Image (cartoon, rainbow, N blue to C red; front, side):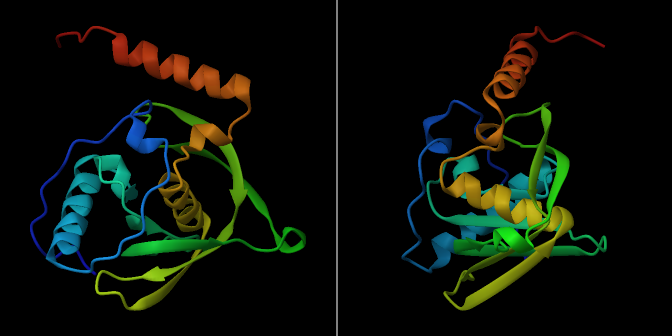
Length: 182
């Protein structure tokens, strides 16, 4: 589905919000409400300058994510996956890539995180038609990152404990810093 309709940007939820830290429910109704949610998700993602967004990042605990992200050839791929199932290469065939990963739900922070450089997601579109998305490079990372969100996991949960605490501390300091006038 393309974001052809007018979506309504919805505020992004931040680390600590309970909706981000528990698994999302499967989508069972493929109706206009789902289509509206997807349009709102695209609008929210673009308003926040993101390349991917999971439904729970705007407070909706359903297994849906949208993306508009380049693969390793720099070709942008755009879409939506409902009820995704992530498939990663077998360990023997897996190549990990380190990348400074960030998240709209942990604004202003980035941390190096190794993830497989290839990923496949099986799911359905907004009408329930099966689909498969294969990703390399940043798109592979995005598919993994957004599926993690739907499982109640943030990228910082994959970091070593000490690094995770550093990122959270920096986020909290930035969040609590008084705004300055220009």
